[in-house]
Length: 417
Image 1 (cartoon, rainbow, N blue to C red):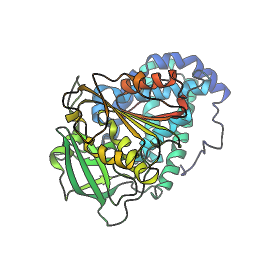
Image 2 (image 1 turned 90 degrees about the vertical axis):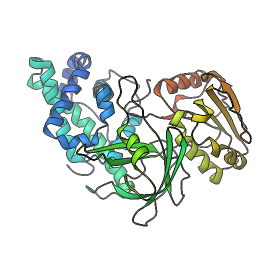
Image 3 (image 1 turned 60 degrees about the vertical axis):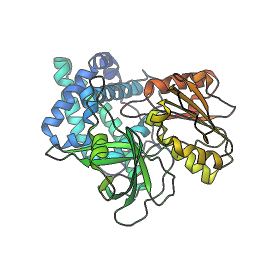
Image 4 (image 1 turned 180 degrees about the vertical axis):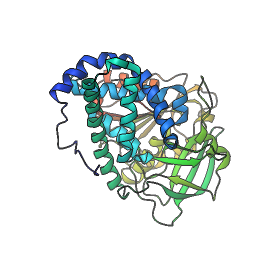
């Protein structure tokens, strides 16, 4: 398959009339069995291609998040093609998926593998209901989705300077390591080949690929860049993921915390991500929770250099001042950004207002209706999905257009519509 078999920006994606009727009739059955189908798909594919385990988040596999996200995406796309989910922002959704795929180094040659095992899984779960016309119709759905993604990913690779079919990975040397809190460490990185790191937009992230050793293979995770765009070095700020609620501890975050130090080498992708955390001018609202502050800090550092008079509000929620990573950088940013207002919510606010940080500090959980909003505000959200959905709902109710609310999700998925 060529590098750009389907330019989704120039063509209208249409399911054939015959397939539309078949997919419409079978969509309820596929929807109701979606997670069973994707669970079977992953087992089939990994049995046949165990090397692909290195591309998938084993934590999300263990909790079922990965199969739930895949099922939702394929079913929703089928609904989009048949008119069942009118109004879904598919351009935004496909861009988000394409950026994630590019950061993992997904190639066009892997799509036939996925398609073959996904459609076989449909047959395994639905049995005799999958007649040849049904199989052909769902095969058409899959390839329309695949071609849209392949085209987008080809453009992303070209923009990042990745040669067609070439590896996305580049070796970076760890030049600094700073413990921000008990569970958060920042790493500064420089290209091991001595070349320039390249620029990025605030809100972009990189994939970090680590060899877990002892025959455990490779795992890849995405981390937002938390430093200033245009700097000689890049920075990622990593929270240790502890096993909670049945989820296993984070393999990659644990490896980075326990085994990576100054002088070591990490493999990074180029910077990807469809969101610019600085918006498009005018008042900017940055809302974050926990480690979701990382793109906001990159945005503030960028604005301090490029647009210091911008009206900016930072609203951040954390457990306590002691768990608020990169908090010590805010006073200097306030000096350089005279129109920066900081609002903090701490579950435990004891000792939360040490000078020289000028902030409005509230004890307890964030109340989204108390986050300041001015006319023309563009917002960027980053944090747990439940938190972002709560904030987004409040902003929309108070007049911020949904199209001016950008967000970044950790892990698979999107915000509910």
